[in-house]
Image (tube, rainbow, N blue to C red; front, side, top):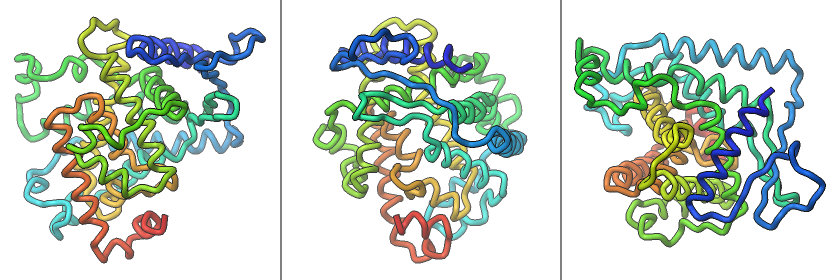
Length: 339
């Protein structure tokens, strides 16, 4: 049932790869003939989850309940958050709501789901149907409205004025923009990145941002994931600027920025110690946390002073956080430190 969405994402990924002068091409396994793959051709297989239908339905229902509860909270970001640094004791008094922490845990588990996996021995990408449906559930929610209501809560009339005066990106006001096809396009570009020799270790942007410090702090497997993310950002930078985009391309180009904005909003509302561990530590074995991943994509996509400053602040806070003794008393932190 998801073949049309996968095919749409493959078309988008190939278009972005082509206009960014990358030689790679993605094709579907179900539309190929018997010929051998070209050297730069990567075949996509779409498979069902090995879990039982009942288990899959139960997981989707749990996730839907968490997202519904989180989106019902339109209290906004309390002004007190701006007076508390991530390492201050007062931070524990802000937004301790279990709903937010649970939502952060759910978002963190997105990385745990193996929605896409590169198999170098067959030059192919394997997509799991159930995990794609979980992504569709999470990113199909009305996050645009959630972001706007959170940002402007407590300021009567300000949201309406911002819309009227054109002070908001159109992408945030024209309905759903993070479609499953757009999100899957990013995943495909990431998986293609695993098959490339793209390097992020010695570029001027890496040195200026502090990304080299973050890379050096990661194990080899996590470093490889961040490299594939950086390849995604590199393709988006070359394909999404200085040319006229069709709506589908614009959707895919905006997806990384919108998802990054979402992680920031969720992060601001989740200030417990557990939430900070999820935001700054690598709590899923083999993967950098999602905050670092989106920051890396956005930095490579748009290496300006703002994205450099955000990532540098993130790296410095992460390094300081690791030194705090209370980390070992929080289960999710203990697990991350052990990894």
